[in-house]
Structure formats: structure tokens, C-alpha cells
Image 1 (tube, rainbow, N blue to C red):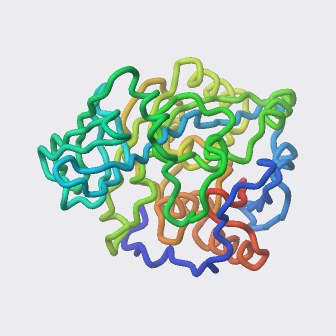
Image 2 (spheres, rainbow, N blue to C red):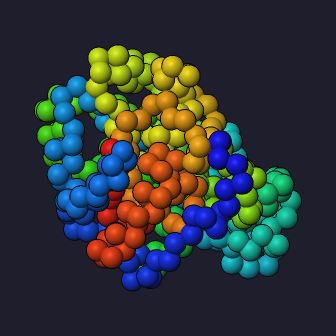
Length: 345
């Protein structure tokens, strides 16, 4: 690994107006910056042109996690003070790890009420990082209660209200559990995926439930001192066999998003063989890391000093990635969750 890399080495200046506030009417109409990681050459395309970079025998790896409406607004029972609870990770049927605001008001034993008592919660533990374990009480099915009361937990840099909840989901989302969308997948339409499949490209579904730890600012000076939050991921036997067969037959692995990359890297051995199973991963990928699985990554443009920017810098080389970001800013690309895409190949 690259020692003594500083977090500040991954800072860049982004004009605020380039932060995409709304999704495009047509998902696949985003722009696509293509970066050749060997030569550093940059090409400007449209996202629907992604097909031209895939060929028969390749494998497209997608993360089929589904975002839950994880943001709950309620009141502390004793004082009626307004509180916000963000569901991060399910620990058991009715107990979740959560992020709460304001934290000072919610100590162990405190009770909160949502939707005029339809859902209630009790703080059972204050965790070392300030997160809270909450046990929920309700009647019926938790997912249905949450669907009724919860809001989509959009990142803080998106200030516009989301008109359509589905636009913060991929078209292939099915396994509920994420606190944020795997945003590189937002560019795909069902039609585009069908066309890719018709070309003889196999589509492999993995699951990584995105926690907000992925987006938390890195607060240490030296990168290697940063500790990642863990996220739950899973690869089925069928998916592992599909990916391994593709590699064995000389096909290329295209990972859609950093979450797909982290899942494969967490569940591959040193020979690049992917193993089925389920685990909590806290893998942290930054320059110096030796990749085992992906040949290409489809991703969005990431926040300055973020672990996601460090991951793509590890894959393509920091200097090349930063030159590509400079070019994207010059060309007025749209950045972050609802922004344009990048293919590193």
C-alpha cells in the first residue's frame, strides 16, 4: 500500500453549480467520460454508448440492493423535541444501528415516536462512534410501516426535493437494505440492459447494502489511519460461477459502481477467483492496492477527499483520475449522485 498518503492529496475544487440536484428525465441520457487507464486518453460520449465498450463474453456486475426510505422524523416522547433517525444497518428483526440527530437528546433508554405513535423506538445502546442501537415497536410489517413513514435519505448536497422516489433506485433494485443508492447503476434503463444482454454479455447480480459510512468524510490526516464502517454483502453460488466462468473464458469484468468493486474484492482470493457467501466488509481501497477482479469500472464523479475517489484513484492512477476530473469540470459535467458517469477501462 502507498504509505503516508494524505487525505488532502485527494482534494479538488468543484464549482457548486456542477453538483447535480435532479435526475435527468431519461436515465441513459447522461454524459459518459471514458478514461483509458493505460494511456490516460479521455473520450467524451453519451452513457448509452456504453454498449460500444462491451463485447460478447464480457460480464457486467451490478449491485441489486434496494434503498429503503431510511429517514424517519419523529419526537422524543418526554419532551416532544424533534428528532431525526437514519437507519443504517439491521442488526436483528426489530433492532437497527442508526444515526440520530440531535444525539445529545437521545441517550440510552430514551423513547421516540414516529407518525403519531404508529412506530415507536427505544435507544438500547449508544455505540462508541456515537451511532445508536434502536429497538422498534409497531403493529404489522416493519417494511410497510417504514414505506408509509420514511423518506429517502438523499445526500446532504442534494437540496432539491425528489419528486419520484423510484429515481433514487436502480431499475434492477430488489434486495432491500441500503441507506443510499449505488448511484453508478442509476444510468441504466431496462431497455439498455436488455440490449447489452442480447450482445452476449452476461449480467451478474451481487448485493452490497450501502451504509452512510461510505460517504462519511475522512477525518484523519493520513489515509491509512481511516477506519471504514462495515457493510453487508452477498454473492450467490450462481453469480460466483458466472463471474469465474467469464474470467476463465477470457471475458472482461465490468463493475458497475464502487460497491460492486468492493464486493468482488472482498470475496475474491489471491488468484482472482470469486467465492460465494455473505459477509460484513470493511475493505478500504486506496492507491497501492492490487486489484483481483475488475477489468473496468463504471462509476460517477465522487466527492473530494472521499474513500470512493481514493478507490478509483487506486484503479486508474491518482494523476490520471485528477486530470480526468479537471477535464470534466472544464466540460461542465454534472457531479455526484444524480450526475454524469465515467468509464475507466
